[in-house]
Image (cartoon, rainbow, N blue to C red):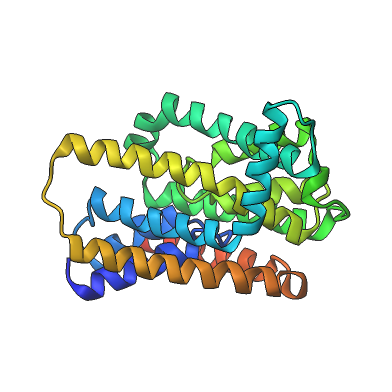
Length: 265
């Protein structure tokens, strides 16, 4: 991989992982559009690790409180708002983990085509726009109950289909359940932590089994760029979300889907 290839893919991963526009779709499409070789599993692990460090660093105080209260709930100190939120994140991860184990091969084999990405980009973009305009946004993330966890967790499992966007579909589900825009975004970001850990772990296992040579300079640069860009993305997204809403991302998804149809139909 040359330096331009590394910089482009690392920044793309960092900027799209937490926006409702599908990082996997962009990482599949960019090499196809510019005829780059596949970046390989090692680089995928590196950029996922970069985005993981970014979200943990940004929410470090919340994560530490959630972890402490969650451990307290296990030792009989009772439930708190933070421990309930930690349980919601943990249980909300189960559907995507089970779906990944059951359907990953089929998804990798049959659903990574540009036309599938175009359909999911447009369809779930329209659903996000509907939820942003018509849903009643009154609740914060600490009000999430077990029914909400089930709905958002099942929605997250759909993100295994390229183009859906994990952050986009979980924010859509949160909005439809009455969460405010910032609350839907914050819960989606917290929910990403175990999902990225699972994804990076799965890719690491494949990498170990492949026993391929590793370009450590490329990996370090990928981690740094994806982590820094993801941190800035989270910060500015949360700052601007109440002001701009989700409609700019809906419009972007519709345009991207249209371009894909023109290029690949």
